[in-house]
Amino acid sequence: MEFVYLLISFFFFCQFNSFFYFQILLFLQIDSFINIQYFYSFFSSSQLIRYIFFLQYLKRLNQIDNEGASGLGSALGKCTNLSKLELHLNGNEIGSKGISGLTSGLGKCTNLSKLTLGLQGNQIGDGYESVLVSDLRNCTNLSNLELELRNNQFDKYAAQDLGFDLGKLTNIKKLKLELGRNYIEDEGVQWLSCGLGECINLTNLVLDLGETDISIEGALQLAYGLGICANLSNLTLYLGDQIQKSQDQFKVKSKYLKLKRLIFLEIEW
Ligand SMILES: *[C@@H]1O[C@H](CO)[C@@H](O)[C@H](O)[C@H]1NC(C)=O
Ligand SMILES: *[C@@H]1O[C@H](CO)[C@@H](O)[C@H](O)[C@H]1NC(C)=O
Ligand SMILES: *[C@@H]1O[C@H](CO)[C@@H](O)[C@H](O)[C@H]1NC(C)=O
Ligand SMILES: *[C@@H]1O[C@H](CO)[C@@H](O)[C@H](O)[C@H]1NC(C)=O
Ligand SMILES: *[C@@H]1O[C@H](CO)[C@@H](O)[C@H](O)[C@H]1NC(C)=O
Ligand SMILES: *[C@@H]1O[C@H](CO)[C@@H](O)[C@H](O)[C@H]1NC(C)=O
Ligand SMILES: *[C@@H]1O[C@H](CO)[C@@H](O)[C@H](O)[C@H]1NC(C)=O
Image (cartoon, helix red, strand yellow):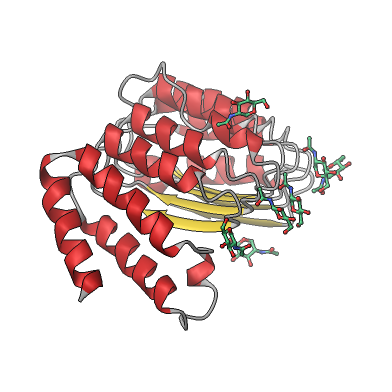
């Protein structure tokens, strides 16, 4: 009963005031914290189940804005022993400031080793001058990162900023970056790949660039950028139907096959 009550009040407050939302979040945190390895471990503890419900509930809210996301970040930043976190906030109203706030909180969780941020269908990329994920660089154990950013508001400059930030996360080994349905263009992809080239420990990359308005030029430039990732051995690239001619697809694929350390390559059109 208590749990149901909390959710309802959470919902109620969240509709009107993200400060209340933040307070309740803190309350939940003090009440039931936790190691959030729930996706991977047993669901035996009632506290864990409570938190799972809570996060799943968040997922469905369509009200979380920059302030809300930053509040969530601050709250999560108090859980400094967090090692794996999967947070799905798809379809909200989170912009660049929001993701900065969220990751600045998470940057305090220095034991974080795997992080998944589901942020599809938000507004990230608006006001690209603000930092996106650079505060995660303090998480020196972070080796596995998944950023689901499909259908946001990235343009080429925002893509450049993201690349620059990601380039600072030199301990990342596995990266999944979903940037489909953003207006990135060739230039943005080129700049993004310069950043990714700085991730010297990157071994596995899954990159979704479907519907980003890139041409064969962008796809070839990307290969050049990724060629600098000295340890990249596994690449999955989704380009969608932007490159349609089979001779162009052949050209692109040949270019990637020349990447020296690549053992596994999959390009989806
Ligand atoms: C994380 O820290 C909290 C309090 O700081 C503690 O109760 C909890 O047991 C810790 N969890 C792990 C997995 O160390
Ligand atoms: C990080 O993890 C190590 C070992 O698992 C632990 O000793 C340390 O206290 C943790 N650090 C924080 C900030 O929780
Ligand atoms: C990251 O570390 C730097 C230097 O230790 C510190 O100034 C900064 O505040 C930290 N950022 C976060 C988000 O904790
Ligand atoms: C990284 O993880 C190791 C154990 O895997 C732990 O001993 C160490 O404290 C962690 N580093 C930080 C910065 O928390
Ligand atoms: C790359 O990974 C190695 C081994 O995992 C580690 O020792 C090194 O510090 C990492 N490099 C950087 C720049 O973080
Ligand atoms: C990445 O490559 C460098 C040099 O090629 C090597 O020293 C380092 O250990 C590699 N890191 C990983 C994680 O394989
Ligand atoms: C490469 O990555 C893909 C997708 O993450 C995975 O399915 C595949 O098993 C990996 N292959 C190798 C050889 O590591």
